[in-house]
Image (cartoon, rainbow, N blue to C red; front, side, top):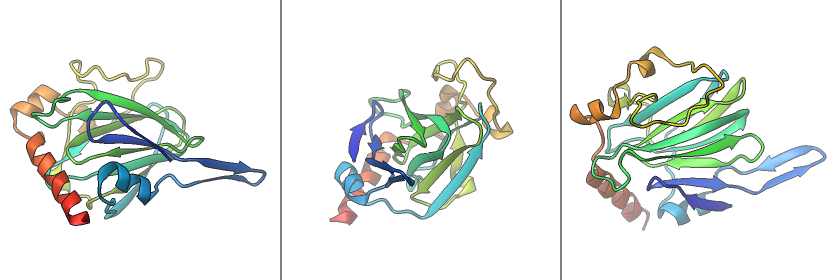
Length: 202
């Protein structure tokens, strides 16, 4: 499995080997050994999520209060999507920066989004499926969003489709507003949280 750190710190793309034959294909999108080498600890999976999206659906930008936050390891077993990771950690050298990875059912690449980072994606095919391995359970009071169409972020959503969003995501604040209201994660606090996870793994 190849591991690549993304332009946003503490986000990684994992590209597994695929094994096609006359019966179909086998792949292991998550491998603990590769994950531990990249992060210094294993991934705690407290909940797995399964979403199916129409073409053009945009979900995000979602994040959770950190600590504990919610890290996500995501992959696409059906269809295709453009995954977007945004650094929402105030004080981070890459604050406000973003990176993208195409995830699809052919390569079965996966993306790890550490606690404190924002996550969004757009479905490029009908019935696109996303699998999320989450480090903590869903906790509604601690869940937040930043507007995926914030002009200052200028995320690279495709021009050839009309975006479909939830009411909650459409009403989400801009990055500047979210920062001004104090809901964004603190970079130092996130680093301390990552260090605790590595220490527990020793």
